[in-house]
Image (cartoon, rainbow, N blue to C red; front, side, top):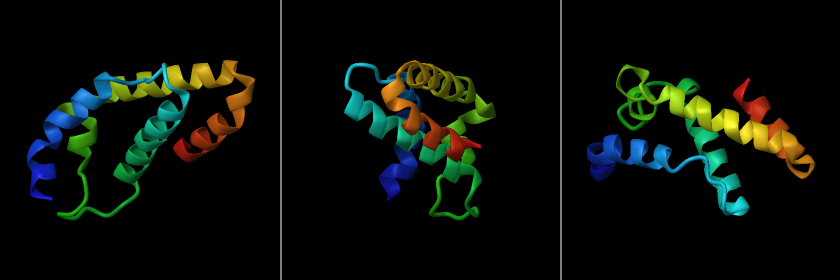
Length: 97
């Protein structure tokens, strides 16, 4: 647990820089749903020592917010175009609303 707290400030920006995933649809679905869950949990849980704080996901001064919005926007556009993935898009969109 201590390693997570010490290195999360390096992991989050590196991870976000790899998104959105385009080559592997299965991995993309899992990773983009994870990002969706992380954003949800940032705003829907009580503050505690054991929970990730806003600053870890959103960055200092919310500097990662534009990248997160960009990922959601690009994924949404791809999913809208793909008729096979519309149900998955609706589920994710409903979670964000």
